[in-house]
Amino acid sequence: MRLSVLPAFGDNYIWVLRDGGPALLVDPGDAAPVLAAAADDGLEPAAILLTHHHPDHCGGVPALLERWPALPVFAPDDARIDLDCERVGEGDTLRLLGHDARVMAVPGHTSSHVAYLVDDHVFCGDTLFSLGCGRMFEGTAAQMHDSLQRLAALPGHTQVCCGHEYTLANARFATEVEPGNAALAARLVEAMDQRAAGRPTLPSTMASERACNPFLRCDMPQVRAAAARQLGHAPADGVETFAALRGWKDVFRA
Image (cartoon, rainbow, N blue to C red):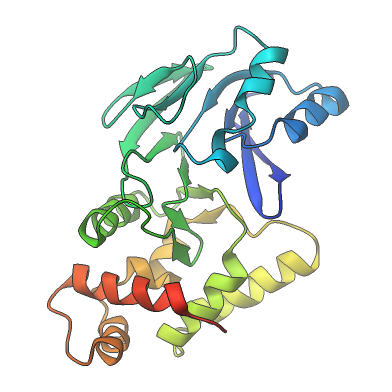
């Protein structure tokens, strides 16, 4: 399947996955880029997948349903997504365009957040970012850490398709946590080159995230040491390490 991306707002991405014809749309927070792609290159949506209820991820759906009234919409079981849609949750498998889309519950950013694994692509919304993770608006550190560890367990070639272009900002924080991480330094150079050329830094790969993303590396000695400096004591486990990193990132200014 061919992956492409439609930028929206200041830094959102709407993901488009197609197999030579109709396409899956992930998190169309804004209808305008989709409608423009339909007019310009014949984009024909076959289904919409929503990861969570925030308007910048689902706000464009009503306008798209006006254009394509029969378009199926799949979303987590959350009343805040006030749409006529099929509700999905952990362990569900959708058969779309001849491919399986497996649903993973990944709470933390929101209580009902899900991710979709389609072939070797994971659409993870605002749970996992390249070199970072989402803020915990509703979940606990234990939930978010568990969600990230489950995503990190996916095969290394899995393409990480997250919801925002935050890579360079995340890289500045990650470098504070692990200044000696050579893989991270190389990823930063790559991301800078991509943005300078006007290209997205996404998708990343899960192998790259495991090597570079501090929020997936909470058991690494250097990451635990950075967390200990924030806490004033050694973290008891990966969850406490994660919580220290997330709290630090919340107030971090490069």
